Image (cartoon, rainbow, N blue to C red; front, side, top):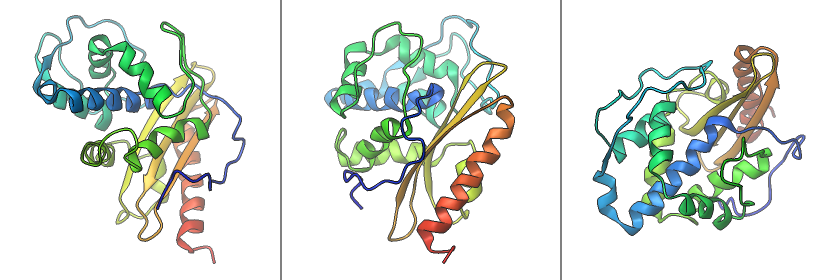
Length: 233
């Protein structure tokens, strides 16, 4: 299937949110683009030099990187994408070529952003551009895009989209949380590899109890899966 076609169905498609940890996907894409230009970068080691305060996650990773310990780029990408580890992502962002990060957005057709901006508001169709670029191998080579999708398939967050999809169906997905203690945001994007009919889904939610939002995402995912698979016919 070619996701370059504008054949999506959207509800409240102009509603913008803070994508939060879902911006770890363009961080990954930026590094993989850099690796394509310099393959030796993949084995480069980096480290977290201080345990600075980071936002408390409502859905913390099963493990995080340690301070003053060397990690390869491959390891940091695994922690960042599979576990959504904010510490690993911080190391990547601190060592990333910011011009390349800007190009990741503009090269796939998104608007640029200002350095130091508090957040980058995105709609669901906006965010879908990242997954389209990966699925279509339009930003990275097919081999590198496949590597990125494999990382996303091993994401450990299982409380949202995948709750509405049978375990036998592979899903490449990433969640993100943002907002405030009184109004949380939880979002998740994914490509569902439904046999003969893969589809892309992005669900962005907001509510006073962030721990109630995974169930909302799972319910929407279930409705979409039933429609795409013909189960509701």
